[in-house]
Length: 256
Image 1 (tube, rainbow, N blue to C red):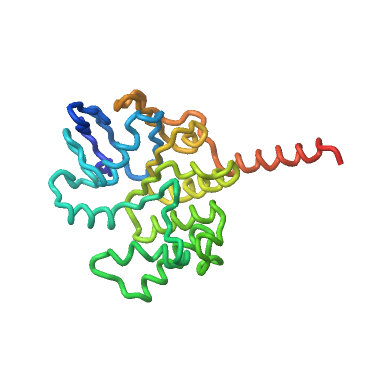
Image 2: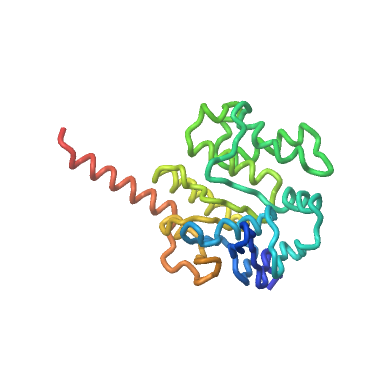
């Protein structure tokens, strides 16, 4: 078996607030293999968002070790961390984090401007178009975010996360602002991407969303209290069919 893409060894994060030490993450050891689809769950204050920030090289652990694709994160400078993030990681956020005055295509192109060496502009444009096509938005290239639905905006954000061909996609509550049907569609897209070989780690507090993943890691008070395969995994195609059937039944039962 190849080495894990994520290796946490007794990793901890302590914040100093006045005279008080806040232990956000407490000695977490965790391995994630390439090709996995993992949900990190927990209530507010459980440490899941802090752990995600460590995984995304947005925050440094104060104890223990973190290796990303074999690289010891603690040994890197800020510039090296930024380069690693751009090459290895793709990020998807709850609030989409799109630039409102730019088109879908321009939003997706943005991460490529930070690549080194820089790509030719024509190559950037082509790759961005391919990423949008991959998420089903080939016909929305020149639309701005305010001209699109929430689900379409999240698809743009996913295309942006994919455009640099990352080793790992990190998604932070990616369905938090979406309705049920759109959430199913987004989780279906994640399942398709994972089936193509992309490793995905997703933070969520919703059990029904986590059940689309292959593995669930549950946190409480900064500790991992459970790490198990998903026993009754939801598949987006099946859930979409159930929702369609329920809506048909409801329409038949409603008075004319």
